[in-house]
Image 1 (spheres, rainbow, N blue to C red):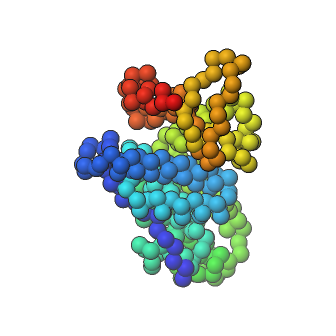
Image 2 (image 1 turned 60 degrees about the vertical axis):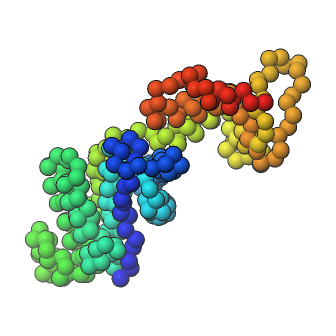
Image 3 (image 1 turned 30 degrees about the vertical axis):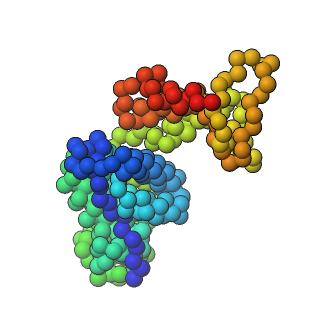
Length: 295
């Protein structure tokens, strides 16, 4: 039996979560950054599952597991998203009867999925008819998987297929009516209904950077995969914007550094303020203003 790591979670509550624990600025910063990373990779995981790239889904799941053992700032949507990933992880491996999860070694993946579904019903507000429909689909698919794998004793749990079980036959048209691929997409739709989707903060910040690069006349492909250090990837003194195109260009920065401009810093500050619901405007922040004026 193959044992698969469990995608479980535990939150360390801090900023924006009732202040149940006190943390220093550095820890709070790390918790917030980790939430952005987890939110981003959850979005990627859903995308890979939706597009039937299941090998990629498993790779992203493993990356998520690494982030979830670190302190994580939670919000209202995060537990829902992580439960959904737990559920999809089991659905993804559900056609493999020899797979199990660390916390439920004696259950098949689909049986484990029903256990996660029970947790979802206890923790989240989900219409009862949806829970019953999903539970029924999982039970039926579990029996179909057992029959196809000739595990007839385990398949006896479901009376609707009892005739096939008694015949000990793994070939029948009823088994082809719903493919496992269709079942996966049905379960994905259920998971997507658990929360309202919004683009992850890291994606929004990246899009803003792409816009800034385009405004600066920087080629998009060159900006995505630079072969030489780009201005925002260079380290050097902050320079003021040129007021005249006839003025000499600012000195080149050393390789591997970053040159900040007021427009770039303002874009990042605005995005962070929106994410953290920070009331101050960019102009009101004297600290940021001083950093911009450094020459």
